[in-house]
Image 1 (cartoon, one colour):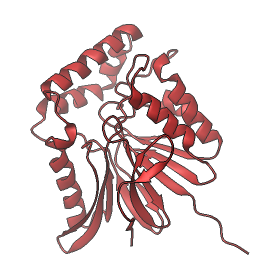
Image 2 (cartoon, helix red, strand yellow; image 1 turned 90 degrees about the vertical axis):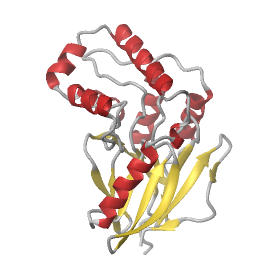
Image 3 (cartoon, helix red, strand yellow; image 1 turned 120 degrees about the vertical axis):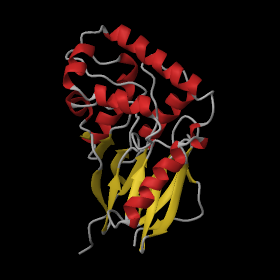
Length: 267
């Protein structure tokens, strides 16, 4: 009797879907990516945060620009693909509405999931930089239930306008630079190194830094693996876990091509 076939896991992050009707190629490529996923081969799809550039849950309203992506995710779940979201700084308000619409399992704190015989710690990676005091204050306020209730009183169209303003302001403060060359790259990887060095985790998988990387870490007498799935607007990168190995890949409409020569084993 043949053993049960183990399906692949795909991991990605930082898609930053806009809250207005999409016209950019990144959105088109992402929806094509979702359509190309074969549920006979892929059993789990994990987003490491910032699927949306802005997400907020009203009682009777969802943003129309996200409809196609929500439908495609729901279709994958109905086909038997597990869906997971580790919330990032742009979708920290994700909750029961998103779960109901797509069947996603949503995590607001780091979560441990199995990859073959190993366990990996998954988190977005925001809130780790003590120098980013503005964001740390915003996150504290945004997680307050009273503040969330007040925001819910804002009309959805106004909320979208505020989100667009905040997004433009964030890009202006970054002076249009590539976030994969910013300070968060080192901050997130150093956090992963500490987790591995203390024996807290053997595999740490993050987003947020926008730089796709699979790196072996040796620290504190421990060895482990740090993985960052990169981003969608610039790199179109994602990670495939298949046959006990992690592979960094990039999306093309015709196929999904490997960015690296080989995989990295978990053991």
